[in-house]
Amino acid sequence: MKKLNRKGFTLVELLAVIVILAIIVGIVFPQIMNSINNSRISAIHTSAKEIVRWWENSISADALETDESKKQIPSDILSKVTTGWKCMDEITSDTGKNLFEITGLSAADLVTNGSGGNDDALANFPDTNNISSTTCSAIRYNSAGGVDVLLVAKSGGKYYISGKITYGYSNDANGVTK
Image (cartoon, rainbow, N blue to C red):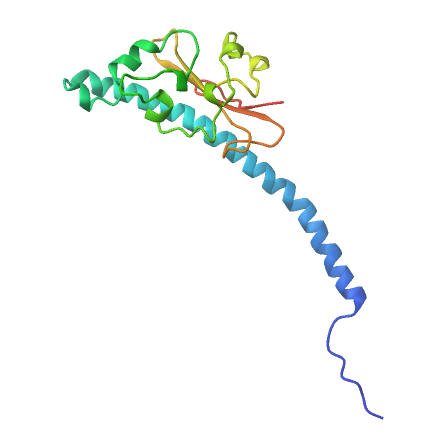
């Protein structure tokens, strides 16, 4: 009688491996998604803070520049930013560029007034209960003489967290609302 040389795995062995892999995926996947969401929150905050730094550095550099064409922030933009929140895409220079374009922000990633956003909900910000999915990304002068920047993630953009209103505020450590 010949001995059969069986090479391979039994059905029980295969099922055991599949169950172990499913358990590992079930444990690791939520942690990976949490890390991705934390990265998105961190990125939108960093972007808001970088715009403030860029604004302050540009103001300093522009004060030394006499040629208006070489200035980073057009003078007419400076006069349009107020102590009240104003949507960044509404602040337009005489050259036709808005503050959104000047800072290099993407309307695909952030809520603009042109994408259905509005500044009505900004009246009492930074009370996060007033942030909605239609709050536009905005800027204002603060009481210390600097600027505050609020960036609100657009649904489907690179900062968006599914089912959450995601925002970055230049003077805030939080960033996700319900």
